[in-house]
Image (tube, rainbow, N blue to C red):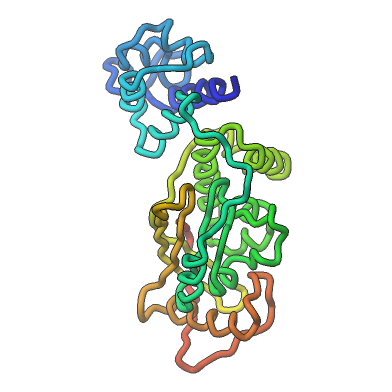
Length: 308
C-alpha cells in the first residue's frame, strides 16, 4: 500500500506543478477563474487519453498496474525527464521492483585499488541509499573522512544534512542538498521496502526541516556530471567537475571522480590539498592545521555563488 500511496503523491505533485499553458491547453491564459493549482484531474485524463475515473483511481492508490502506454502518456503530459519517468515506472510497478538487500554492499578489491591510485583526483564509490562504500585519500580530505565514522553513518546524504562542516563545504549548500534528496528519492522508488533506507529517511525527516521540505516535494535527480563550487578550510576555494560512472557488474554502485581545470587556481589548490592530506594522514574537512604553502600555488579567492 505504501508504494501506491507514493505513486499518488508523485502524480499529485506533477499535476500541481504543470500549468495549463505549459500543457498546451488553449484558453487558460492567466488562470482566470481557476480554483485549483496546476491541472485538474479531468485535464490530465484528457491529455493522457484515459478516463477521469481511471486517472482518479491512480492518484488514490486504487489501481496499481497501469500499462506502459499509460505511463508513457503521463510522462509526456507532465513533461518528465528520463530520471522522473524511470521513477514513475518504479512507483507504478511495485511487483516488478527488486527486493531490498539488507546485507552491506561490497566494493571489489580491484576497484578499491583503482581509486586509491588516483592520487591527483578525489574519487569515491556510492551505493544504494547514497552509502559511501569506498573513497581515496583526497576525497576524504575534500569531503570528510568516512573511515572515522560508524559504518551506518557513512552516508553522503546524512553527511550533507547532519554535519555542519558540509554546509561550509559548498558555496551553495541548498542546491547540492536538494539534488541529493532527489537522488535518494530515486533509490526509495527502486527499493521501497529497504529498512535501512526507510530508517535514514525517518532520521533525516525528524532532524532536518530542509530535508523534510524537499522530500515532500517528490522531485527526483539523477547525478551524471556537473560542477561543484567548494570551500576547504585549509586551502580555500576549489571549483571541481564531477563525473558519475555506473559500474558494470556491480549493481547500484556509482563511481564519482572529481577533476579541476588544468592551470586554474582550483587545480593548484587541489594539488596543495593532496600534499596536505598526505602529511595529515587523510583528515576530514574539520582539520585546522595550516597547509604548506609552495610558491607555485595560487589561491582561488573569488567566492562562488552557485553549486552543482
